[in-house]
Length: 472
Image (cartoon, rainbow, N blue to C red; front, top):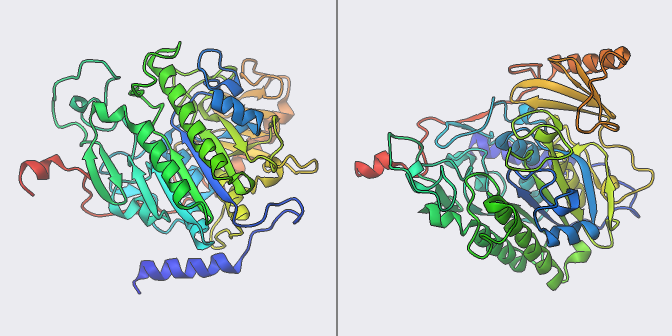
């Protein structure tokens, strides 16, 4: 047994030795419930009907919300890779993936193999685990989903704009393709497991939602008789915009609206499969986005957009669906986020959290179930942008540190009126809350609580044009 295998074995023993605390038995579903997480890329807070869209038609998400529970204060991160690291590890992104921005093709770093992901926790509890879609936590073989707990993987290892301009990844559908200039980024690969299936060109991008949806439906059907975890991570609606032919030109909101509506169709296919297979009594489905929408999205009534720590950059539209278990047509404003996915899914699976490391997330089941006496999962939340702590929240109060701007999100979710001058005691309390992070993750740069990145030598793109051109 090599050192890495030994570490995995020891961690597995720790997982079994320290079970999660749970809610009263009468309130918690039986262990081994199926879990499906649908994660959209760059979807704006008000891009879907349940969160106020008036331009995009989302009947399937409308129904999902009518039958489920909206989480109106659910946080990702300002950009892709950090948000997905939080989802996978149950930690603030900076703790598990301390990088200033996102990962790029051929990077020698990624989510460390020593990290314990939600897929590993659920697989240890006897689940089949599948990821369909975008990974974005490292594209070297050592960092791929199949090395982080997923039995099955089909998708792109990073964003759909990370490739050569001549392949259509820097322009929307229908735009003229620019000529190849310079070296640029390596070709965009579509993977099955650890095998590159093809180089993704402009036409291929128009098929991604359909192909991902079919793979997700097949995974559900193939594992209907056993507990499963499916993570469906669409590249849509990240730029460039490539809606499929059945949706192109059909919305009132251009290519962007077309792709939002295609994503809604995909959600409908997943939920209909769960219904058709009569899996509703034992299947939780969560729909969310990795970060706030870009400037082409609608984040109203929130301020800001992707890449910022304004609410519009990190607060994402989230719906939890489980007929008979989650109260229909309800919502919760409890502070929650990607960091809570791992603890929540582990508890529902009858699994256990890693006991040898800090986990920032909490089990959200009491909130999802709408229990009257459910305590808030988080009293406070820290808004990191890369390695820097830019804002903190406690209850309804949010302080932007650099500006000393204070907002009461309960009265002013759009962060329009700075009330710091009227509330000096609150400002002082939130500054103290922020300063306490200095000895953990640090206020800027790498703090003592940040765990090491994964790193490899001689990193190479998955499709290496230099090797192809020189016959290597």
